[in-house]
Image (cartoon, rainbow, N blue to C red; front, side, top):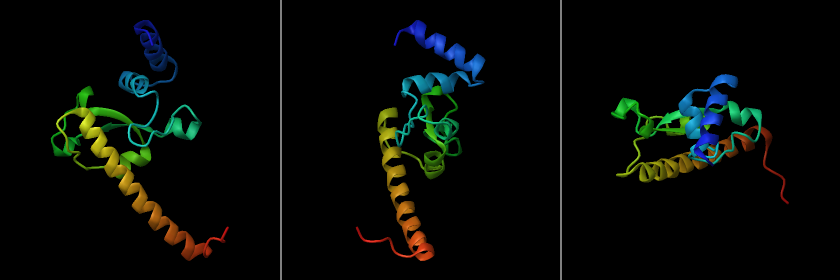
Length: 127
């Protein structure tokens, strides 16, 4: 994508869609997908509305407010990661570690939800 195209999209997002510059720039950089689970924000309205800025290293644990410490993720991943302090010496390593943590957390909650679903609705029919 050309620099001119990026600047046009950022300006349009800010003007027409009331989106901050960081959301727009990071969205473009991440192809408008959650940095942790890959959810496509442009696929449908609920996905688009779930996009949030995440501090890769949480502010509460000494992370900076700068753009280098921010990524766009979906609301679910942001809640799963919450105050997790990702390991790694580079942004890419920290994102990879946070992605692993979020994936493991999501699986744990999916298993818990399956147990609740079975308790409430009964066992799933065999295929």
